[in-house]
Amino acid sequence: MSKIKAWLKKERLQSAILLRSIPATVMTLFVVSVICMNLLANKTLLQLDWIALDGGILISWLSFMCMDVITKHFGPAASNRICILAAAINLLTCLIFFIASAIPSNAGDYSVFDGIFGGTWFILLGSTVAFISSAIINNMLNFTIGSAFKNNPDGKTAYAMRTYVSTFIGQFLDNFIFSLIVFVGFAPVFWNGFHWSVLQCAMCALTGAVAELIMEIVFSPLGYRIVTEWKKNNVGKEYLDFVEERTEA
Image (cartoon, rainbow, N blue to C red; front, side, top):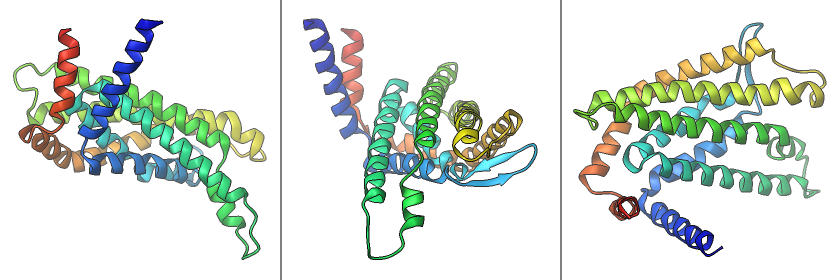
């Protein structure tokens, strides 16, 4: 029991140091993008026989770019911690939205507001499971690919390869897992037979991954500039030193 308490104490300390080490702008953009991704997923933007897209595709690229930046500078474990925190904040936000939508009002017709912000429990379930699963895989892939560049791990080529590959695979898994859970598993039961086929889910995942990859290519210079500036200015030195000390111990 004492070992468990000691481990929990170290984990809380490490998380606290990490949270004050990551610049607020990146942290804020990441959490907001996760919340917006969950809300936008409620709307299907396109549905054909072979493809379907939901609104989450418009913002999910930002979540993955932030994860890639954090993974590059702080490591995959740090990025995983932040992903779990973002998912928890999203759940809390959804709970507040649900309470607000459930409170009756005689000031006007808020049925549309209540329908949007009240949320759908299985969409929240699907997005949470898909996000955490794909985020962990994305972060580990990003780190593993980056480690393969022994000669110049901080170069533009190394950064591009680690972000492009991890983003494409991570986005595909995120979209596919979410689509299967929501539009194949629950939608036919709770949405009067509305559903996507497995082919539509796969094509949605593939199309989304390609779209996110394009966005990653467009914005990767910004991500590379951020991590370069972080390293130059010793951003997060307290956390990096703490992790190094724990590793050596």
